[in-house]
Length: 399
Image (cartoon, rainbow, N blue to C red; front, side, top):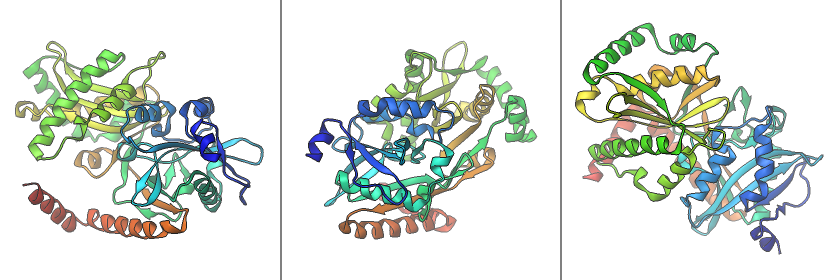
């Protein structure tokens, strides 16, 4: 009967309350929880990342990227019946086990739950873990594989990060101030700004005036994304790497998430540096957004060597930072992984944790294997010598 109720979109309740007073509900239908979800998002007290917005998750699930996996939305309520935590999940097979992951997988840089408030996020880690285990049992889940959990978000510790292992890579970002010019002076050194102004002057001499555009219509978003796909395809071809953005499901997701809604907003905001006269798109940048934050998801630039000397990607990033500060967002990050442009720009390291929560007795082997893999990846990526050797081996295997 529980499975039937779940298939119809009604919540499956996860048994008795735990020691923390939390009751778990598991939904399989986005529509069944949309009102609650949007209500939590709209509350100024909410603590969440842009990747857990309803519109971002709905666009991702609607694209069929994780076809064959089941959707499960976990809602934890307190003793007064108030929703305190919401976690969107997909559940799929890993060998004989059913493993739950936060929606978005590698396309989301942060997989933190949505907490109704900082008070909700202050719950003891053991209470949250116990609630997850009870919900997992009710939903037939063997384990939760929770990657890229920020240790701290917006100054508040994430209880789901407790006891996890350091992720192979962290994310990098910056705080934005109310004064856009002051923010640019803080983020970019005087020498960097001087060099960028010189490059932009030379770019204008080469191509004519350039401008920073933000997609405000579906057509504008599609035009920028077409340039992004072409630029990425050329870049991956040069590297001899398969282009993940060529997948139809990924493109469906991006089209849905970048299309502005009736209010002019979108789950993913796309920017471009454009030659004004010709309309040629020189660089692009896309990021998941909410009212307070821009989370960088991708960037690209025209691979024409004649343009490379003008660094159009760096010029666009400079414009982007100023634009986000001017519109009142408080933070901007450039995603997970090390890169030179991040090191030059970012002054904040967002530490990430890999967390695996076993539910069934059969899942303990998976937990052990996952922890060993995370430790190995962490050691390789944090060692310049080992990372260089791994990259060299990867190149040889692709030949």
